[in-house]
Image (cartoon, rainbow, N blue to C red):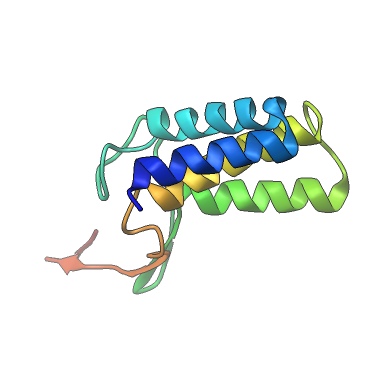
Length: 120
């Protein structure tokens, strides 16, 4: 099944089961990820990625990791900024976009390169 067909089927199924508010906020989250992220893997987007240096390694916190962390914290604490459907939809759409649209989504811990005494 093609990616666009899978996305369409997912949206229709979600709207029938959880409601249009969830689907609308999911689409807004997905679009926010598209607009804020790079066009493809390795490109810097409008919103800079969080990269934490750790010796010979660097920890790249992709936006989908941050989104799922916030979603989990929201669920555990019971705190929702605009209600559960909107919060889960927006953060879920943001996480889905990060995993679905980039092939390097799984690369979180990356070895740092050294060139003439400088870390990259």
